[in-house]
Length: 323
Image (cartoon, rainbow, N blue to C red):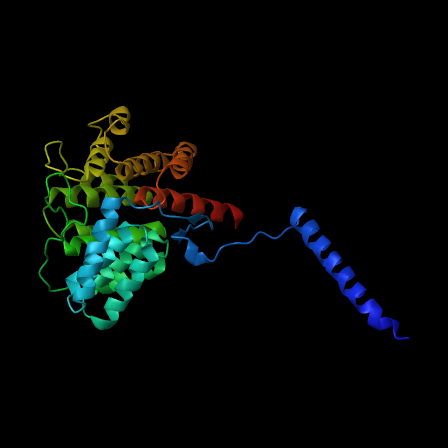
C-alpha cells in the first residue's frame, strides 16, 4: 500500500502549523524588523534622518489650493498660474509635489528665473541645500541686467502690502542655502547682494540680520557692527519684525527680555530664538547656544527657517565631534 498517499495531507498540515508558530513567535519577539514606510510618505527628512510630516491644512487653505490648481489646469500655458499652483501646493505641506510642479515648469520655461527661485526655496525646506544652491545661483545669473520687481505675497500681511522683490528673494534664499551648509563666505556675498536689491525696510532688516550673524561667525565683529548702523526703531517694518527686533538687540537698543517677549507668529519666534542662540555662540557662550537650539528644535515647526538653522548647527556640531 502507498502510505505516502495517506501521509501527504498530514505533512502539509504539520508544515502549516510550524510556519504559523514561527510567524507568531517572530512577531512577539524583540527581533522583529520594523516596517518603514516609503520615503514618499514623508514631507521631508531631516539632516539627522528624522522624518517630518506636514500638518493637515485648514479647510480655507485647502480651498485656496484647489482654486489655484483649477486655474492652472484651465490654462497651463500661463507661467503665473503654474507659480501660484506650486506655491499653494507647498503651503498645504506637499513640498516634494511643489518641487515637481516647478520642475515641469522649468522644462517648458527654461529661461524663467522665478521658477528656479521657488524651487530653490522648497529644496531648502526638504533639506536639499545643494540643489537649492544650484537653482538659486542660476536664477541670480539670469537676473543680471533685468529690472527688479515686487513679488506678490502668497500669504498677504495685515496691511496687504508686499514687502519683498524677485531679486531680493533670489539672493535671500541663496544666502540661506549657503549659510545652512555653513559656507559663510558665499552666504556673505549673497546677502550683500540681497541688501542692495531695494530700499524696502523689510528687506533691509532681514538681510542686515543675516549679514551681522555671518560677519560674526567669520570673526569680523567690527564690520558686523557697521552693517547695523542704518537700522533704527523708527523703520516701518511690516512683516519682518523678528529680524528688526534682533537687529535692535544686537545694537543694544532693546534687552533680551524685550526681544523674547515680542508678540510674533510661531515662525518669527523660531527666527528670534535661533538668532539669540547664535548671539551666544559667537560671544563665547556655546553651551548656552546649543541649549537654546536644542530647545528650539524640540518645540518649533520643522519647516521654519529658524528650526532648519538650529538643526544645521546641531548636525555640524555632532559631525565635528564624531570626526
